[in-house]
Every structure is written in structure tokens, then in C-alpha cells.
Length: 521
Figure 1: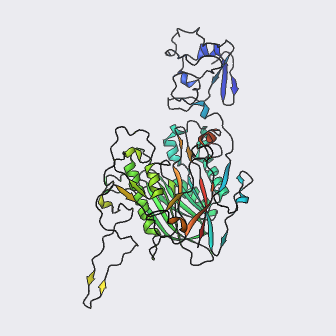
Figure 2: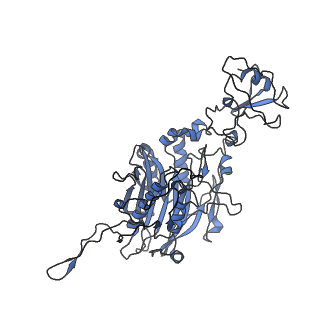
Figure 3: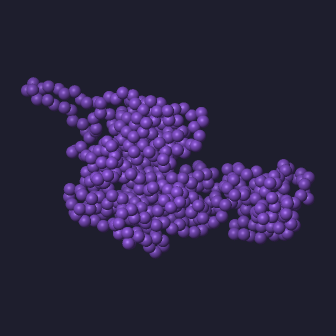
């Protein structure tokens, strides 16, 4: 194309200005020049400001073969020998990402163990190629275990949303490249419990489940109910837990128009294997809530359904609740009404715009207000996020004794409530992560692709006994969880130094979250 061969700069090229002047005007400018800064829709090509003023805007580009009327034009302060930077990556739409987000293709992300208490703080290490986290310890009165939550990015969803990954080199997006990396991460962190989202069904059956079973995990899986062939999996180490119950939750309800989405949840009840036979079970929940930022009504209803199932599964005979770990991609940002509801146990949604629930939408223009109540009564879930059960009338027998129909499943009995704009749940839930770096106030990031870099993934857990008193209305816990450590998260800037996500070493557009807990009896 050029009279003088361009010189390579990594995967890109440089060429003298006069060559570009002769040959590039017949092409769409955006396909041969980088965009400046972070402005992906900037209407001008990227020439370095060291050479000329960026106030210039190019005239109309004529069709191929048409004589360009300004062929002798040269930008201000650009000499004839200056080099123009040409990208080898062709931008085909105005949604493409700027060069600054593709500036680096290799590198290893370093993440630290952050110890929340003094337990083994002296053993904290940087997780690199040689170092791994210290092992959890068990004794007669305590049980330590680790939990990973990881959205591994379904291959079908990746290909259906390829516009989110234009910053990536194509080879790193192939499943044959990605899965070994994902499995390597799982092996490296060696968590006792895995909560995985966007697990594609065919990959789960052929590769993921067999690989994890070979590592000593027992796997449970629930696929979405619609056409998307992915779902959620909870996997746990045989050596640490035994399985008491598996409880899938389908958020789609044919008879309720509001619940027309195919998202799901999965709730397991696990029994720790420890010397003390009286140890309580642990309830582990995993979900991937609806993405749509403008359907906060659906998100809140899906969350209420998950909390109702957790309440049912974790409820014990003495009226207390066993410790709870709730993981997943909640498609909501820290500080949003949905997030605050999980942490605070209460939400007054009167007058709340439907698109403000998850915090993903910055503007509520044209959005309706949440209805009161959000979901219809025939869903069978109260405003306290528990299953509503009609109390069975007592029947008097001939000998004067009273009998009552036994329920097959432990439920919390609730009375009919008047319409209220207040949602509640009775769990004392804390987030493993603080979501902002304390020294700078810069947000932590759990997902990063061409369109955004935010936190949407969480590990919530029920507070230990002494913390329950600080949460009004919190229920009694049979034992509690103490957070010992967490694997540090990163900033958006950190992630773009390795070309965002996915990249050569991190094969999902989400980071794995990892926490270490202690159950004390």
C-alpha cells in the first residue's frame, strides 16, 4: 500500500506522513488511525500532540477513487518526515475502544492476601508464580474454610457480545485457550468451596466437572431455564464437607408476567467435616441476577426469591439459622439500593425509579417508579423475603386432642401483611470486600471489558454471634462466621496495564473473589 514500507511497533505500524497523505484518504480514517485518549467516539484521528494541534477536524472523506481536494494539506507543526502511528487493529464501529486501553498485551496481575484479623498475619504473601496462600486450620472448636466466587464468562455469551472484547487479541478469546487458564487459577487458589457463574452446559459436562472432580470437588449445577445454555455451579471439597441438600431456584414463573427472565440461583446445605459432631451446617448460595439496568423490579424480586429459599434451607429446628455465605454476580454496584438492602436488611422503595435499583443507570429519564408491592401476591413471598404459608386450621378430634398437618419443608409462618413499600430480610449479612481502596478512595473493580470497569460480584456472609446485636431484627445464628482474609481486588488502571480482561493470563472478564472464613463454636 505504501511506497516506503511501514515500520512495525509491536502489532502496530508507523509510516511517513506523505505516504499516509497519498494512500489513506480513500479509506475510512477510523480504520487506519488510533483514537486519542479515552474518547472512543472522537471524530478525529490520533496524531501526537507533540507534532500538531488537535483542534483540527478532518474534512469529509470521499469515496475510493475520488480526488481528494486537500491533498497538499499538512497538520500544524507536522514536518514531512514525521511518522504517523497506524494501528494494526481495524476499528469498524464508533463503539471501539481507544488505543490507551490496548497499550499492553502481557503481564501478570499480582494480588495480595489481606488479613482482616491477626490470624496468621505474619504468613501473608503475594500470590505469584511461587507463593500460595497459607492453609486453613481446623480444631475441635473451630473450622476454617475458603470460598471462591468466579464468573468464568460463558463462551456463547462472549461470542454473542463480541463488541465488549474488541480490545482483546483474538486468540485469547478462544475456549481452548481460556479453559486451561481458568482451571489453572482454580488449582492455584485451591478454595474449599467454588461458586461459579456463566458455566456453559456443554463445557460443564465435558470439561469443567470432570476436571474439578479430579481435584477432589463434588459439583452441583443448575442451568438457566431459557435458551441461554449457561448456569451456576457450586463445587466443594469432599475432604471438607458433606452434602445435606441441593435446592435450585428458578426465577422464571410462567404465571407471573414480571418474572419472564431465565436467571436462576442454587442453594446448598453443607455439613463441615470436623472433630466436633455438633457443628452446625453451612448454607452456601450462588446466583447470577438479571443484567438489564432498567429492570430493577425484576432484580429485587429475583433477590427476594433467593433470600426466601436461603431462609427455608438455613432454618433450623430450634428456630435459629445456620451460617450463610451468599455469592454471585448481582449486576448491581456498591451503594445501590439493591446492595444496601442486602447489607442493611431493609429497603423503603417508595418513589424509587426502576432504573436506580442497581446503580448501573446514571439517569432515570423516562423511567417509571417501582410499584407497591413490587411482585404480586401469588408469588408466595412476603415483604420479609420468606415463603408465605397459610396456617392450616386446627382440627378437633373426638378425644379432644388437636392435630395439625405437617409441612414437608420447614417454612417460616407469616401472617397477611398490608401493602407496604418496605422490604426486609432477617439476616445479618456483611460484604467480604470494602469496594474502595482506603488510602485513595479509588473503587475496586471485579469486572473489566471494553464498555465498563465496575464491581458487580460479591461474597456476602452472616456475621458472627457478637455482631448480630448491631443489626436490628437480625435472627439468632447457630454459630457465626468470622472473616479471616480476602484476596485483594484491583483498580481499573491496574487492569488496563495488562490490557483489561480477558487477557493472556486472566481468561474471564471478571476477577475471582476469594475469602477465608472461620466457623467458631
